[in-house]
Amino acid sequence: EIVMTQSPATLSVSPGESATLSCRASQSVSINLAWYQQKPDQAPRLLIYDASTRATGIPARFSGSGSGTEFTLTISSLQSEDFAVYYCQQYDDWPPLTFGGGTKVEIK
Amino acid sequence: QLPLQESGPGLVKPSETLSLTCTVSGASISTSNYYWVWIRQPPGKGLEWIGSMYSSGTTYYNPSLKSRVTISLDTSMNQFSLKLISVTAADTAMYYCARGEWVQFGMMGWFDPWGQGTFVTVSS
Image (cartoon, rainbow over all chains, first blue to last red; front, side, top):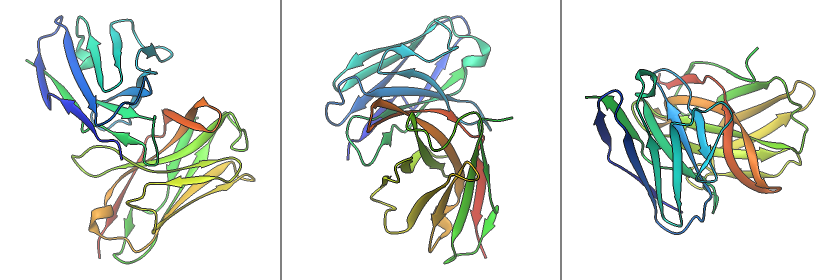
């Protein structure tokens, strides 16, 4: 099973600043990685797939990078609606498909 | 109309069977363009993939749940279902259904969109 580790667990950021979230895989997943955003009491929403491709309707301030075992989600100029929990998910080797434990982006 | 909508009992007794249905709108569940997924999230915790089903009938389950899980399709109702037997309190969670996208045909990829979720409590 591929273990996905996200860091930090919580990130405190001021509105307008940028945030950098990390996701590490226990073995290479190539670019087979997605990022999701989950707001309180809502279902997760796809942000990024194939490590760096934004999903339909996702603002350009969200960007993904990385390959292999190290991935980054960058949110530039954080807006109030961006404070949420973010999860990464690998789909390179399964079953099982696996998620990271999440990073909570909170208002500083 | 939501693309995916979960339904089912919100309370299940320990040792009994959890049964949920996901009604799909806007796409035929028989299509080979997507696959169909169940995911769960215990209170305050992260996401756990339960399993997936292809329109061909092929299923993949999380090894941690495989002995207790069945996912099936009902093409006449455009729905897919989850059954989890012998539930315990550890199965208390928000259960989501989602549509899966292929990386290439037969290779499961990301999930989009998701249903709004349904919370299931396991308690006597």
